Image 1: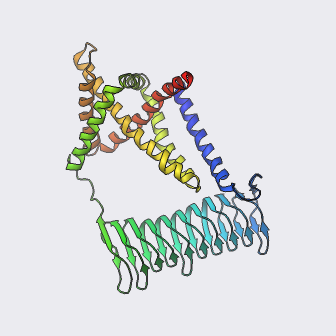
Image 2: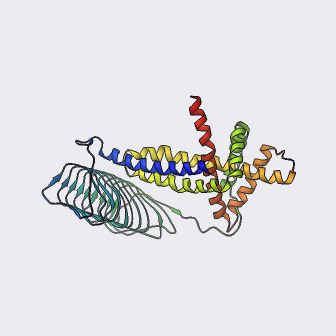
Image 3: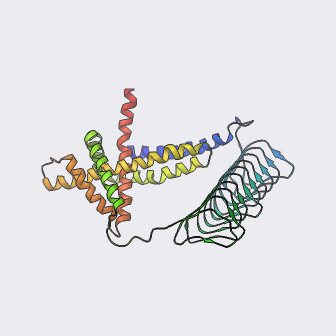
Length: 392
């Protein structure tokens, strides 16, 4: 129980370090980067037209922040509504109720909005927006790429490079300099006069509507998968994946029996603590990755280190869960405590596959197996890592 609490505390600490790292990455490399950014109080924050603030600005007020002049640094939002009619020479990063940019941001825009993100001016580099509504107005411009995750997205301006959108409804009336990728939509339409200089790559219930008068490249449409039918099925890909999983599992069982035994003892003796730790890691690691991706410097760490390790831990941990499940079943059947490791793994693999593919229970089974995999592997590897560190 104590180690589980320590793991939860470490997860929270990692999130705090990532947040501070985001500020450090944002403020590095400019004059005055050694000074702390300015934190706003409970009053509205306004930079008047004609004035320049030579620093970063962190805004935590519940009132509006308005940049009518020039901010010679980054604007970091933690809750307020933001209006930019002037110039932000750095990035705009954070969480906000609403964001409207009718001026210019010379860096990147990476915001999560509870309502809307409306860009009426110019973004010098890329934009990543997560919101209920996202609009790039006529005459507006994004200098490189735009990633829009939204309920409703509308492009009437210009995206110089590619656009990736996942939106319920999506409309294009402007220009995209590269590929247009749209996914998870119900309705998508490219209006007359719109220009997509690359290809249109779409995944949805039906092909996007390309009106006459629109100029696009090749249209590549992939139908989204239909609802899972209430029956157990195994296609060729699933069988191949199962065979690969079995091969890796047998290899791990043979090469690391000690680690596998430690995992079994942890899961058997501290089942609920392991499950709780796994749920925390299941939610906390993607959140940490999201925090890192809010900064340019953190994107490689999130995409090339954290998320691959997260995926590998889920995969490897489920091998251990299968071995634990099979061991428990065989131990009860035989009654003598002598359980062959390889046979236990194969039996557990069959049971785990059924549990995660049977109709109606597959979602609960998948959640439990992944949570136990992450929690068990995390709590098991902790002492091993400490022991190696002491030996070094």
